[in-house]
Image (cartoon, rainbow over all chains, first blue to last red):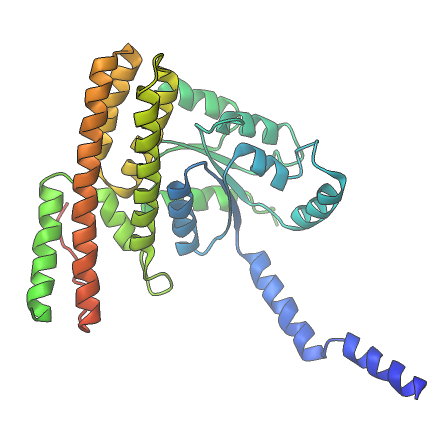
Amino acid sequence: MELMKSENIVQDRQPQPQEEEEIMQQEEEEEQRFHVLAVDDSVIDRKLLEKLLKASSYQVTCVESGEKALEYLGLLHHSSPASSSSSQHHHQGHKVNLIMTDFSMPGTSGYDLLKRIKGSSWKDVPVVVMSSENVPSRISMCLEGGAEEFMLKPLQLSDLHKIQAHLLKSLPHS
Amino acid sequence: MEVGQMQRRLVDYTKSLFMEGFLDAQFLQLQQLQDESNPDFVVEVVSLFFDDSEKLLNDLTMALDQPNVDFKKVDAHVHQLKGSSSSIGAQRVKNACIAFRSFCEEQNIDATLRCLQQVKQEYYLVKNKLETMLRVKQQIVAAGGSIPMIELGF
């Protein structure tokens, strides 16, 4: 009886070969889509940006602050031990192809976030800064800080082709 | 009212909102983003705008009611409202916010109070109009009709 029991347990644990293949296919498909991290404190702008990006077949993760973005990227040093180990493992397993951030946010601003990213292991990920205000000094400051692009809000569907160009640039050279 | 009549009414009503400056091209962008996978997108965004704006207007009323007004705080709220109204295409609200911000800079209490009234007025106007428009859309869909695409040529 004991032998039979252990056999059953072993069978239940192993996924069927077909299921494994399906899971792998799904993961591969996800891997092939670009993943954008979108940062904005406005709930409306987050919803809009998410829709714009999804309409262009990008995978999107939206966060509501610079701090949450740093946490997602594993760049916040003072997170609790339990959460940091699991989140580091999880998020560093996920690639990020592009970061889009609003400029004016309370706490960690889009510019602060840009500088932190460019000074970290994520420095090669293109960062696009967005703002509702067309301030030339702000634009040059962001571009000098390493931003790929500065975009005026509200973003349009037609702005997405600029994004695509940056994402294609980020692909590894064959 | 039969579906054809409702559809014509909707087209005329929507056109008037653009002509009168209540809505601008950004609202068209919202409509373009709506599709079968997210058929309630416009309603959802507009609802978010209503909730967000009402909270901001309350915060503004309180902030301007203080003995010592913190104009930086007031400006921050107006900036947010300007951003969200711009994002959904509520042009007159956005313009009222732009005027509001210039008076915040001057720290002019009387002018900012007047601006607040102006913004509130524009907000309630556009809210009313959007709700009417969405209601007619719902009625058309409930009657089995389709929502006509608005051709505006700009």
